Image 1 (tube, rainbow over the protein chains, first blue to last red):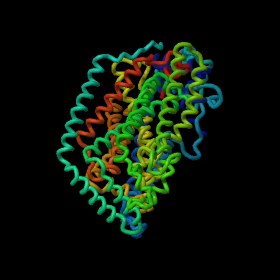
Image 2: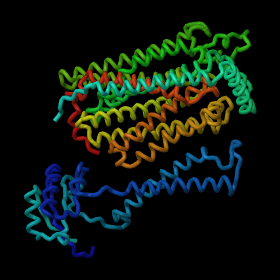
Image 3: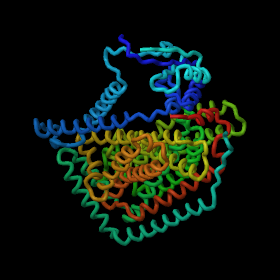
Image 4: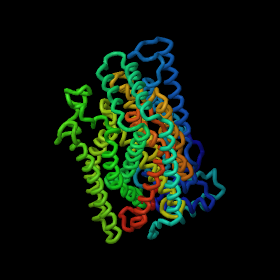
Length: 175
Length: 452
């Protein structure tokens, strides 16, 4: 993999409570945190990191709405105009029998659309090699990545701040 | 962190409830006077019979002649004057509705124990207090049944079971065991009344048993009370699964005795359950804004909001499952139920309003996360859901009794206010007699740190 020239400082934390307080303290010191990787979900981490709520539900609603209208238009056109068929003596265009298909398509499009949106927003695509700041984040360590280019403080200063807030190791990682 | 909280039923709350009760009585009396003066006693009854006959004849074009005869027969027993019938129907309707809310209080507590839920620890006393309504509902149910049986329940008339009579009804004769087992056909419905008494006694018995464990926990602490309550809850849930379904057939579906739906037990349960959840949420919000329940945060409201949202959708799912099957199968004996409710003046607007209040509005208004976390939105949606399901039960019960003499007027609204005032009074006075928040609940700490 070719080098992108990005330099990161990586703090390793052993305990999630230390991590949570650490994140608060480190951000108060004016350090910008690139991302934190944890082996399991840590409650409250997104709040102390100051992340805004995901807008994924809005995308889901819009995809769902697309599914609803697509299903209704499709069925009304097919059974009402393109190839009208008498089924149980009902009207060609009648709402109740269309509801199950409408429901299914709404759910399907909302789900698929949400997954696709999530992959695109998270920049996950086939054949992309994921960045790993420290492979132990999939085992038992919490890994905090700090982009040096995005911070005004020097590498040494940030390293000291990390140590002071409970990091068990501080490493460098270049991509 | 856990403060001892004690709800005090203040005189000003009592005064407010009394005002609602007074307004209810006033509207009820006005409603009776209006109903009495507007509907001519005999003419009204006969007109209804005629409309009913023509309706059934026009809807059952093929087959179903037997059903036609029976449906028309149903309206021939017009018994009491329409305005008296209307009072009976409204009493029965409100009592079923509020009985359900009371039972759901106990059911909610039992579900929390059986699921080992931690989040609900600080609010469990509220559904528990709602369970205090069970004995009142049971006594009212028996009283109203004995007073109004002839008008409410077509199947109670003895000549339906006499092959020599002109009113002999083969379908009901074949169903008669369900009502009259242990007794004689057309006489006293032993089996039916036995079930009614047994259900209310069982529910109340389990209410006292579970409540006893919860209060003993306050005094002594330890986890053994939680485990005992959990065991009792599991037994209660099994009993409730059967009894809620059977009571739905007995008290609501048997008003239209020729008609049946296999979804009906679930349908009534779903309606009760979401109403009960809305009532719990509303009481929690009001107590919180009055300064109680300090440990209840937006996270707990979020869970309650999710309950109301999810079970509004669940109710719709059940409603639609019942409707679609009957719509597609198109059997006259079954479709007559929906034709009465969809196509005819006093009921059709309620039929569609029902879907808007109970599905469209809660679905859209509670969809976002913020809406479920803020009391201001829940305060709007919960009353909508409660009113919506009141209409839902109205449309289950009234058309079968009143045919085309029904309506929602001052009489119905007044009686609903009377029931609501008495119900709230009973619940709040039950709530004021025990600590508002469990003192030694083993999951209180989990609930205080609840975060979603």
